Image (cartoon, rainbow, N blue to C red; front, side, top):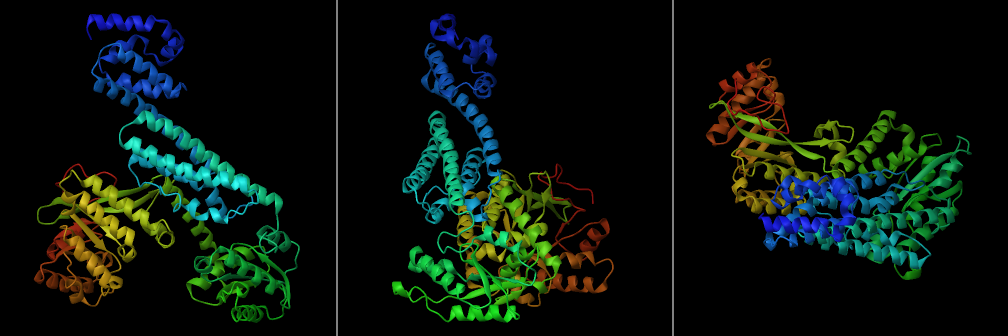
Length: 630
């Protein structure tokens, strides 16, 4: 900066225009450093953005301040714009961190008398905003930008509200949020941080307003009908809970669900679907031995029975209902199928009924007697529900991470590969491995997103490294269209990494005779990808079927490797596997190599690679040294 520019700068600082900003300059501690700022000292430029937000200085003021300052120095326009971008970006990231904390806190607020689905609808656009912020900050998956297809958009119809004007405000606000979201992302991707911040501010406030509006509708509905279902005029879940406290233990509670009721709504429309529920409610009122009927959820009904043969009578009720046609007044002629659970009234009966419905559906059983269910299963059900909640929170907070376990080439004694293993970090700081949550996790709707997250982060991590790496794929992953399409997209985006990638197949017996799977594997092998069969030897009998499948590696099941030192049969099994693998030019990886003795044992059998705690434990970082002391 020459003397003329410095003189001009001092004149600007001392002018009337900047008198009102003197307090701000003192707070930012940059009054003496503004000349250095103009000499492109990035740390000072970044501090302007960060500290401006910290001191609650409106962004437009700091933006205008720097714009006027920069204009006095006859600097190159692109240089000035770059400085403003740095300031805006740092201000933005401070704001995003701040807003993330607000959103997470608001999603944890207790919503009284709301079902799980109601809570999801009320809070979903706050989770949507958290996903948007994580996408901007960390490049995670973009939230659904089409208002018709996001969770709230798909469920706005179920928000019953007599105030049409209020409902219109909710619908319009929801559409505006998605419009602003699309514009905000476009500005951010083009590094137009100033316009992004202007739109983002509106977007944030509209999302908070949407949650408040949905919460207000919910509370209004509860005030209007605290214990009555407005559609059927039956008692609701809260009325049921109240009544159960005043009934004797001689009664039985029978809960039933209409199987695949959503298909009726899809095929005939919600109006006819509602008419089916009203018809069903009216018929249930007429049955003998029925003390009271409740509509407790969308298509779940609870019946208090006073019968000497409650299990048989519950079956009779379902058979009678299934023999009827519904929707006749609309010429729909709809038939339904039902399943249910029943048990003697006790303090935990509703939780037991809920679990009984799950069992009935999973086991394709018409009616489950919950009095015969082992209490340990019920306790596990409660644990699973809490685990599902924790997994969803971890996903929203972008706490799904790959850990990498090294694989050594036995001949060269060097680390040449890493396997990416999923880890889930929880809000309390603990880290879970898949074995702790897999049974719950694989039935959750967000399951495919976990797989895609691990694939994306692993490919990004190894893109500029020389190592080979592997990622696990289940049968469920391979037959899921969006996951398959995502894998193809990633392979196209990272062609250099594709040739170093191995996909490890789980559940081989499920994929062996599946044409769709074989076609997919053939497609990805066209990118240079290799295929490994995980846990080989765990019950497989058709060895030749494996090798005709285009497998590049087999990973010997850990139970075989762990027994090598104490069971001669394990050695015989491994020897037979090695003989076939070598003849067919398939390389072999030994898992669970946990000691020097096991390492030396698999080396004697001619195994190509070793993986296990003796080589290295899974970690978020790679080993510092490729050569290992073995």
